[in-house]
Length: 303
Image (cartoon, rainbow, N blue to C red; front, top):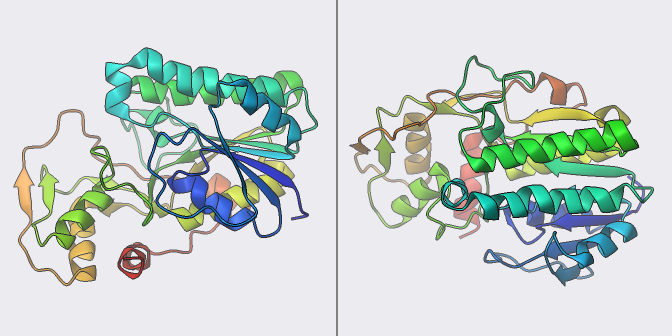
């Protein structure tokens, strides 16, 4: 990829920070972040950090300077979206629209929009392909789907070179363990570090598709480089489903723990099975490289 100016919104967050690390070596990277979440790493030398909001005028100014926009910034707390749907809408829909409107007045080479597997809602069939019905169960899911639709409409109406990513369960050592809504991997690891039993809600046979942030970054690079990604939507997963029971076993192996699992009552509305069909991403040349065992071992190496 030739050197470009890349704007990464939410570049201090879990995914945005790894994208910044990947692209800053050979490109000019600008990070726009409102610093609402704790930063768990150092910003690389040479990266321009702008503290601001995607709804503000500084976002418009930065988009106008960019060759590529990778839009990861979002309100990602599902429970907060249920409590404060207007706040969720302002951040995820109006913020995205502000960026898209700025982008259509430029000669941008790519606009990568981070959506979410939350747009699918209850699983009707597995593996979940990009044509699976979208029936979100929260304002968060609705806002991410609306952002998708705006992005794709801007491609159709204004020829904006958009590519949309629908990540499944992303994990990395930069997940915020203090966030009460962190994923099950973070919760298992924190309890293992504290020499406490992992807690599983239900029987543990529910399955998820866990993908390393490193594989997410590889797929984003393909979305930027491959013109056939323009105007398309791509699931970001491994195509492998892992039960929560198996996940607990792997985490305990990593931390050399043999504490018994504590089972609690299943949570209402918990989706039973979820795994991505990644055929579309594979068509771009994507192949997940990080096994769950290796990915979780990285948590220990980073401690």
